[in-house]
Amino acid sequence: MNATTLTFFNNKGGVGKTSLVYHVAWMLSELDHVVLAVDLDPQANLTAAFLDEDDLVDLWESPCDSATTIHRCVEPLTKVGDIRAPRLRRVSAGLHLLPGDLALSDFEDLLSREWPDCLGSAPYRAFRSITSFWQVIRMAVDASRADVVLVDVGPSLGAINRSALIATDFMVVPLGADLFSLQGLRNLGPALRRWRRDWRMRREHWTHAEFPLPVGDMRPIGYLMQQHGVRLRRPVRAYDRWFRRMPAEYARSVLDDASVSESILPEDDPNMVAEIKHFRSLIALGQEARKPIFSLTPADGAMGAHSVAANAAYKDFEELSKELLRRMAGSRSPRGEEIAGDASSGPNNGDGRGKSQ
Figure 1 (cartoon, rainbow, N blue to C red):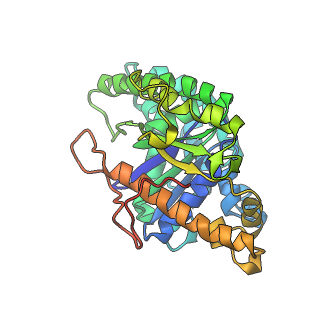
Figure 2 (figure 1 turned 180 degrees about the horizontal axis):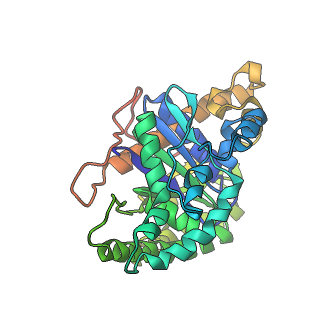
Figure 3 (figure 1 turned 90 degrees about the vertical axis):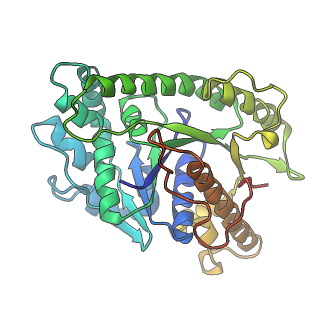
């Protein structure tokens, strides 16, 4: 599998995570990348963003032995079977979806039970379950020829997200400017370090692994700030209070780096990938038209100020997507191989930090 996997993760909900995955997936496909969007959130909101209700009925009510969702791919592991190859949904020429399923939450108990068994004397079945998401993503990448994989997960620190993060190369943290996002960072950072350490211990325990295993890097490449109220292009006071605390908290909690000053401004923080505008009513128009907001036209109701905002959104998401690629491309795997995904690929390239002002 030569694709780079990026997971959008925060154990605090309501930070626009699914919308970000949806729009970045569309934008990367616009930039001539082949994208695989993977819905590992048991709420399946990303799947609902891509597919209409008739598609969802077809997806979830198809025969049980049809691997139309991630849950149906891994469900045989709860019995005596093995992983099924996924049936992807082709959204566009350069964008494919590995759909989610509300039934995925049933898989959490199995993942919790199998985690300690990876350290047992016969760990084959346990490793097969714990790495099942990674195995299915590998099959999906081979089928779609994707070079970038974007993963949406739910806001939890449970066994499903642990296996999802084991399957990922990089992660980015969407944040809101509020106390709950600040506390979320304090929970997320220690969990990531524990998962990374415990997974390394399990890999080393199975000295003669009988099938390939993921490295489980789950490397943080930064955070995204969801902007709320803006006045004169500056955050309003309530937003600014928490906005200013994020740089030091992210460094301390996620990177285990206490050296970052509390006085550093987010706009000067190299860990902030971008500040995402609040697009307000454009989001509703996009949902109704079932397309990204930067593709809205007057026929979709994007007229006047909405049309101007849609054009501005294209530039914002283009810069953000290129910045995510640049940060991933600038990192190297433990084997010294260059990570796939180059910010120079695709048209209209820029070298900005991807910050939406």
